[in-house]
Image 1 (cartoon, helix red, strand yellow):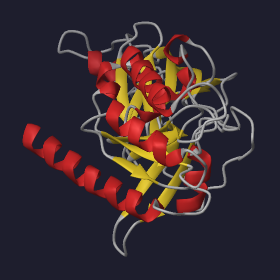
Image 2 (cartoon, one colour):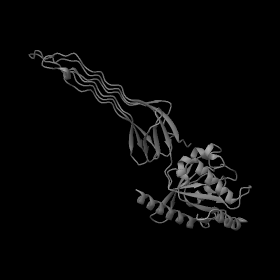
Image 3 (cartoon, rainbow, N blue to C red):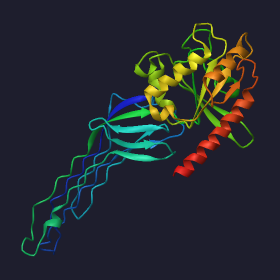
Image 4 (tube, one colour):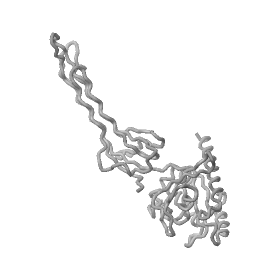
Length: 338
């Protein structure tokens, strides 16, 4: 099961109380205060684990609490600090404070971490309150309470290229053709119910990561169909590949289908709409595909359209090399802008 959202209640450990104690040894009258400090409470950290690909393994119905600090002891002995709690999350997890809406961290790199709830400080023992005029203090501090917070986790997949298109355009077939991914493929709409990732070995030393999303329909940006739940997963991609059915069985022509998807992307996010993109003119092995390709190119001037057949593999290698080139161009633009 693919889970890309979760809400957690996290709390740091309470700091241990300081100790009120006096030194008592034979032949040492008026030994003075020797109460030790309490240990600090543990903190809750979110840590990126590259072996995770979903939020499914994170329990959401429990309190995620770090260990409390131990109280101080006599003879100036410091209480033990509470152990930190680490919650492992997949790369691409956005951590948000549910109460304020503030983004705490966008976790993208392996082993990257963020403190979600800091532990409380341990209290001071009575030895800290001794002065030349107050030599037998009985004051001490209680440990501080740990930070409590409700956090919202949102997973956005990290991929180089996002495959978008209408249902049954052939995105899943293309992904299975070029990678070891095995998405569900069938002759009915919405066979892809969750995002799929595939790694494509384009050359001996170059690879790209493709993300296949459920098919988009008109009104997807407003919640129609399945695509609106998963459009966020291509926000991190650097290039989009519009997979267009060149021999559709319905009344939506290839140019209209392309325009529909572009409009849904624009309404969802101008930044997403502005990403560089190419067209994969799929199902070129079927009747009327050549005529529809000319119409599509006329409707999308300036956009590179690559004729392919995901079913037979024709033209797919050229498309992957073109996507690799687009990624290099995108990297160059990002470098110049930075």
